[in-house]
Length: 244
Ligand SMILES: [Zn+2]
Ligand SMILES: [Zn+2]
Image 1 (cartoon, rainbow, N blue to C red):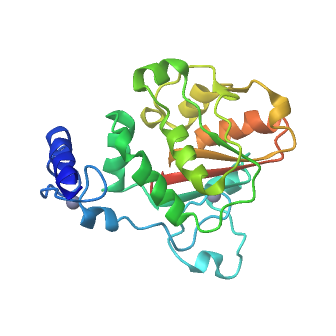
Image 2 (image 1 turned 135 degrees about the horizontal axis):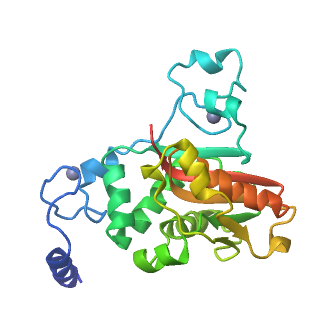
């Protein structure tokens, strides 16, 4: 068997890059594809004070010391439709690089390692009935070949073991990548983009929406709007990472 393992490793090395995508050192028997052990172990969950509604990190712990329900400026200005959002890691290298390889360069081999990161950091899973990935528009799905959020939701669900619904909430309008737009344009870009096809499946349900990266929260909030309109009682949001 060790001989076979050595052959498999050699074959994998022929198709996988030989250097860590994080730091460039030569990869040997590192357990996560594309990354060395040191880089991967350096990925640290977000901790410290954050907005209890959207998870935006606060600069100072004092913010929550005397008012634990203190909301961030964005949430005070416009209450999100979702009940609560958690983001588990800051969207910084090398995780940022890993998510980009996964999402834009079809490195699906990273799904397990990224899912493990979610499972490690999500200490107390929310009390929900149903898991849902943020959907892609069919044209985007064709181009990318997989929905990265569905793969993450699937890995998360190996622990949560809940019904996973991936074809009820759909994206009906192709949208420009949100990162290229300002806030007003993001909202306009996304308005009425999401539709629940079978409302009876979400009525009265507590839903955990899963996505890879949270930027402004506009996308998940639009999903939450469609789900609440269809009768969902609560919509929670769990993302692997968030921009900080
Ligand atoms: Zn490295
Ligand atoms: Zn907030």
